[in-house]
Image (cartoon, rainbow, N blue to C red; front, side, top):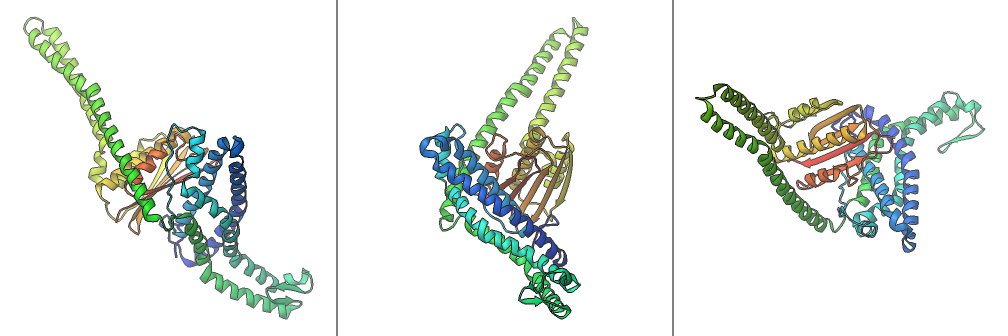
Length: 419
């Protein structure tokens, strides 16, 4: 059974039982009020569309619903080892309020989110609370058996045992031990069932193949557009940078050839300038090559490339890597540039003073999490660059999940198949 506490989703059963109970309690405290607030806000906002108010509020409300669902996706992967695909349709960057509202309402994933909210506030709440009860209710029974029954009303019902004396209190204690044994076996399974329930509603259903074809078509188009833009950037950088400097070097050397006999001092000055220009051109070419495919990535792999990336950041960054081998070069490249973009966002926008990066591989998937202790508020499509990361990962059938409540912390999880 997996819970994800060691960064790879594995804990011992002895640790997993109480940890699952605490996590179930946390989910119960979040799922009921969070789902109620999101559902009521969404229904009211959609209901106000005919009078125009909902055109303005609905995109923001639905974005909040998606953030709430994304949080559950992250927790499902980290706590239950359950992967819930994220399949939202991208919105045009220049869409007006009408286009944003009906673009989101026309997305089947939006309605899956809205259907999931009532499920989460009922069956989801019950399964989360049951996980917690499998630990805390037996503790009550043991306390009753230890003497707490003396200060409780007579009789005090513990399960089906009416406690009115020491004998019945010991019977309640025996029942508590039986419940502890059941919790030891079943708590992790109940917690996983909570996330499987969420996946059953949130994940694409019967039209999954069509949705997958649509997403792959869009990501392929985005990949082609991105490659074309990258080629234009390389051409521009070469033309405006290294090429211009090399042309200047050639002109200087031609002038030196003409002056070397009649004005050696000026010729030496031009040679020094040509040497400086050639050094700068070499530096620019190295930076350009590093931007295309960093040498450390090609030579030493993703783990060392991410460590090298972290060393250049102005924020203290801790990197934990556990990779049994190397993935295909395109996957490593996509993962490296995705991590680079997420780290750049964290440094630029979060105000964090510490960042944690975890890179590991399990079950044929490369999973990367980037956590910062900044102010939060990051969202896909909010101008943070995360939309580009999502498109880059989507080209490889990868997924991006973001949990970034106001006040932080921000947790970005990326997964790429690498079997």
